[in-house]
Amino acid sequence: MASKQFDVGLAVLPIHHPAVVCGPFIDTDVMAVLPAGHPLARRDELSVADLTDKTLITLPSYTVFRQSLDAAYAAEGLSPEARIETLSLYNACRMVAHGFGVCFADRFTVDCFLHERVEVRALQPPWRQTFGFVFPSDRPPSHLAVRFAEIVTATATRLVERDVAGAGQT
View 1: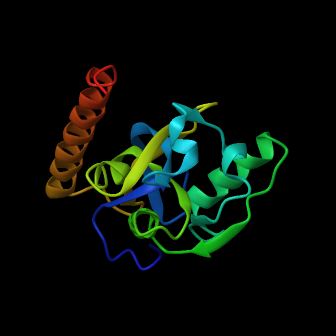
View 2: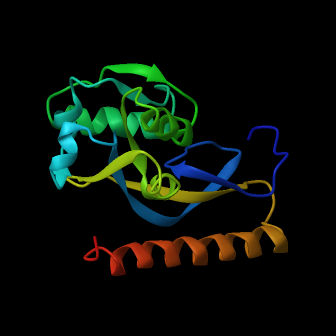
């Protein structure tokens, strides 16, 4: 970001950096992702506490997502014990599909795995994640960057609306 060699970025918010201007575009639920057949999959909802003693796959501590995870555990008076760290939630879900452990992931990442060997459960209390656009602070966004942001926002909104509409059809 500091090199300002970009026109637009997508990120989990919040980000506080003088070289960028950020704006949220959508909030989505974070879900628990379990290997197919996991005993906890018998339940409709889980809490972060339910996964405390499981092999947790997550992102490194310097990421916004991991900081949110740590806060969710702290709210329950707990501390997560990450056994496996990876640089993307997609990779974490892929590891879950192969039986390496459990993870938490945003709704968009989870959607990539709905036909895989995983079980996805809602969290109680709900844990929301905010996604946003990141633009360089030293210049206005280009027309293409603005158009890209509009298309991504419309697509993400349709996906969330589809999930809400289909929520009772499991």
